[in-house]
Image (tube, rainbow over all chains, first blue to last red; front, side):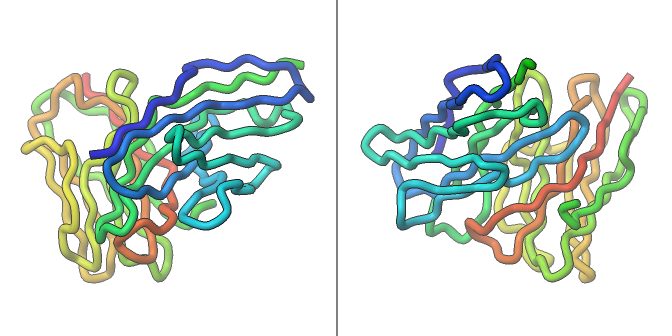
Length: 115
Length: 113
């Protein structure tokens, strides 16, 4: 079974500052990793994903994440945030190589960008 | 817009009642997933259908059931509703049945009074 821990439930930051949202996972098999964003009253939108290959993954809206197998982490970063990045961010894991698509989500991190 | 549609957007009902939530996947997607989002449990996987057949089951209560029809739309049936079933129910779809990207609908917000 897989599990995901998002280490911060809330992250306040000022506009144009860098941000890192932390995600650790646990799995006995190889995994695919995802970051989704949820804006208020909306569904989830994929930011980026890691399936294999380069451990540095670039996504939409200037976000990137680095897969670290030894530390079982997949932290999300952005060098300079905007007010519009205020949202809830979810890290998710999928048991790679399986024939089913269940995603296991973390509890979410609310990013609040202040002017 | 992800291309996944869900109806209704909001649903208010009473305890003990039964409701049906509907989902239409993106064109070409064969898998449909149902997730429940609540304040205490977070985002929980309920069930997956692939091309009309159940593929995987998660923390879905026996009072809940789902199906995927030949046109690939899916319905989630919730019966004998309890206050604790109040939540946001998301449908997602993907091309295949494995680790492909899942595209989420806007959700159905269910309130049980």
